[in-house]
Image 1: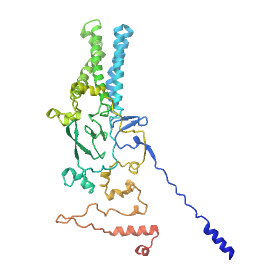
Image 2 (image 1 turned 30 degrees about the vertical axis):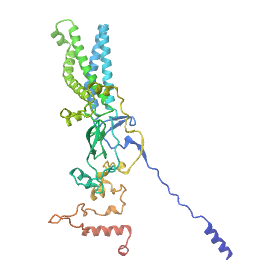
Image 3 (image 1 turned 45 degrees about the horizontal axis):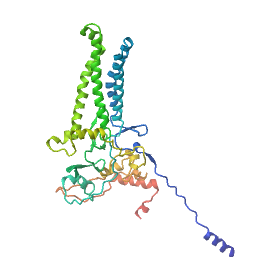
Image 4 (image 1 turned 135 degrees about the horizontal axis):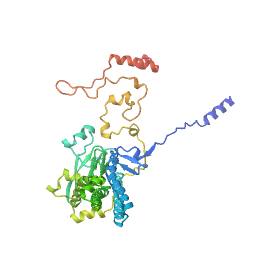
Length: 415
């Protein structure tokens, strides 16, 4: 008896075995790998291109083709007549071509000023009790939250309206806009240039100006010295043109191209002198009302040429934790998630993911959800009818199969 008491005491005093719970750390990836915009990244997120970055190949061919042909042409002339004039012309063509390509890729492969997204709706800092048309989109999706679509901010003593971005879930700063091609809000958005395949914003606009300016100078340079090459040849002009078809082709090509790049350069010089963006010029027409951003012609040019380029607002190389909606490639915002129907949530072809992003258990995958409507039925009078839950005949068969699969008796279910 004493032995039994001793053994019981030892069992009582022995510590209960601890259960080790392994908590997996959240998976992390670089921000550029999970970025919800339509950008393309190279070299580990160091280069940021637009959605249509493939257009760079066409632009490079249109610029580099004639320029390289001209330089090769001058190099052949130097082998025949190595005068200082021909050497200078060749050197100038090479320098302009290299500069043009540098400005092109600094415009295209640079963050234009992308504004970070919000993962959730901002808190409303003002009480709004009126049901205006601009707030219907908020009331329909989040009944407990009211946010005005447009806000007024003061810029240089002028009232400027800023809009709420449904995609980025933020109020855009003044002069910012959302690019539908790249799917980003961009600081001081000028336009999306299809020739460079990138948005033009606060951080790459100076390089864009240098790109179109150097392209214009390069066209004029090749056009002018192609004429000089023809005129320096022996014989008449028409005879030289019939023999030197290459120079004639370069003259015709540059004459056409200079109207495009030259006209674009002149237009942007006008925008710089008035401190406008292309978007503002076509959208607001400051010539009909006062521009709150202009400081005078000299000060406007000085602001572009002497001001520091803003630092990027996003570090695309930083490590971030993966989210379920990112892993599932569901790039809908918080506002849009409320509109996913129950049929979509339980669709087997889509992977059977629930509202919280967790995978639906295998038992529930056999149930039929086609009988559930997302919208309540309407009466003839137009009033809402109470939502009725019903079980069709085939649903009972499904339920019997489910019970037999998991081994649950009908009596147990009733209990």
